[in-house]
Length: 151
Image 1 (cartoon, rainbow, N blue to C red):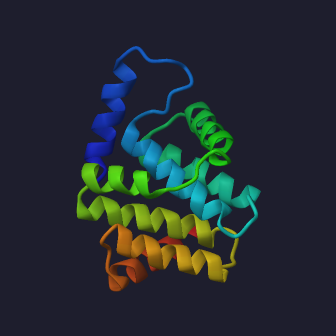
Image 2 (tube, rainbow, N blue to C red):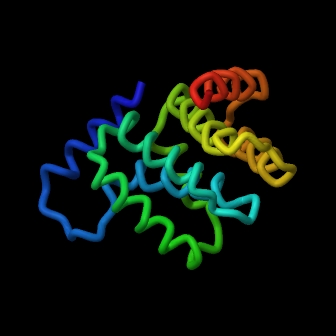
């Protein structure tokens, strides 16, 4: 399902690049959305960050060190970020519908990892569904899958 992302990851890791660069534009966009899901409630919780790191290792085949580095880089740059719509555009251009549903599932997993879904988080997910062209029913199924993985 993440074949495009894995291919992009392999292409990028095979080229010379600066140490502080992300592992690909589409993966960077996903990481930024995961950080947004983590921080939208005003608290950057350790449980949520640990869950994001686990996603990076399991979904994108990062080593734990690569996951940590990319997560810390995204967190450092999150204060400078004004908007996330440019990241949405990258995801829409680079990912098919099933991959976008997977992004929604990952975001739900981050939100559900601390056991609390507040109004800000629920609002973010409603907006993400519309922006990523994912239906409410597809999002509900993604939420159920994420809930079963966070237990």
